[in-house]
Structure formats: structure tokens, C-alpha cells
Image (cartoon, rainbow, N blue to C red; front, top):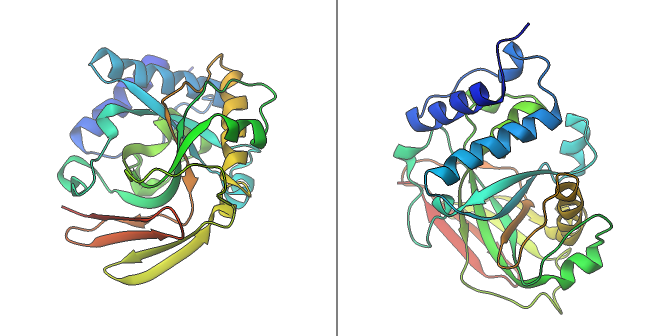
Length: 260
């Protein structure tokens, strides 16, 4: 029998994060780690961070593209936690010295105005609970070597969460067609990728609804004031020291970060 359990998995993942040292997949040694148990690891990991003074400020979605879901054998996005320690203020470089191998991806970000609780949430009801829409970046930083993991591994690792940036420019969601909201991703002025909001489940509101319904299965609701990162619009690019990465949106504005 495996000598792995929830607490040991949390210890290993937090130690890797603190030491900036990646490692092998937990499932290689704990093959019975399933998705439900992986979410228990995730909750315990964030609970440990809260005990150290961090506060939950929202949730994020991972694997929001249907192609990625099919590759991983799931039918809805992953959810993970955001804490205040992950906030990267505007104009502050990505702290390369604190991370292992950071990558960055542009996001459409919601700030919630009302509580959103499943089951039965639809895209329309989800959008009614949104207070404002923002441009943003998520910096992901897997605690697994070369970002190689199985589905339970990445869920346990809080979906590679590390840092995130949210533009202060806030737009009313009414009147925005977020499925058509375009984004150009540039590195040092050269466009490297592009997408629209349709890359996220066909519409970011669909991802938000799926997240609310998925969280409801664990007795969790999305609370007023929380941030929701709806998922990467493009593939993530590695952050390199001194490089400038820019996401230019049609209506949501422009967000730029650099690697320190």
C-alpha cells in the first residue's frame, strides 16, 4: 500500500514551492490518487496557507478549452483557489527569484457583485452576478518538472497557481460581447498568439457557470467581491528576465508585465 496521504501531499507541494524545486508526479508514487481526493489535497493546501495568514480572494479556472479537456479526459474546467499573496500589482515585475519556471497567459477576469451558487447555474444567470470585467494575466508555476502531470496531480497543486495581475480598468459586463473580445499576446513587441473570449468554453460566462456548478458539488459558492479568472485565452508563454509581455484587448484595455 502507498504511504501517501493528503497531508503528505500538501507537505511535498508546499516544500517544493518554498524551495523553488520541482519534482516528479505524485501519481507516480500514489497511483490511487483520484480527482476527488486531489481536490481534498488542494483544499488542505490552501487551508495551510490561510493558517499562515493568507486570505482567499477568489477562484480560477483551468483547462477551459474543450481541446485540453478532451486530452485530459474531463468534461468541465478545473477550479482552484486565489489568495491575496498571489496578487501582483500593476507595474510590478514577475518575481522570477520566487518562482520555479513561470509561464503567463492572458485572461478575462470577473469581479463578482452577487453570490453565485450552483447547481443549475447557466451562463445568463452567471453574468447577472458579475459586477465588472477586467483584463488580466495569470502566472502559472507548476511544482512538477517540465509541467508534466496527470489530472489529479495538477488539481492537488492548486492548478499551478502562483501569481495574477488584474487591470484596474473595470467595465460593465452589459453591452460587452465577451465571446468576440479579442486579445493579442506580444513578447517584446512581437505578436506571438491571439484569441477571442470564445476560446474559453465558447464564452467566459459558460466557464463561470461550470465553475459555480462544479464548486457546488463540494458545498462551495462563489462569493460577492471574489475575483474569477476564467481561463487562459491563449497558450501560456514562459516568462524570461527582462522580457516584456503584453496582452492587448479590444475593449478591456492593455496589460503589460516584465520578468524581473
